[in-house]
Length: 107
Image (cartoon, rainbow, N blue to C red; front, side, top):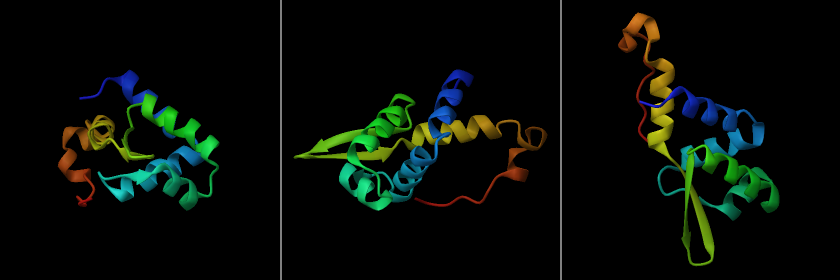
């Protein structure tokens, strides 16, 4: 289970429209992630601006990166994402989380 400070840091990182869009794009792509250039093109964001947003999301533990040749790929950290959702819904519906749990979707 995530600690409150970790959840606050993650939510703070997502509390900006471009970072939220980047994160959603990476979540939609799944574990293989996207090359930085693909994200920039998809969201119409300059590489320099995108680099700043990747850094913030990475420091919050929401994304990870890997280098393949000359490309850097970014992917959502689903363990952190699920931990954050778990923390937020831990006491949902008086502790009966099964009542208010959204349908499960596969990535």
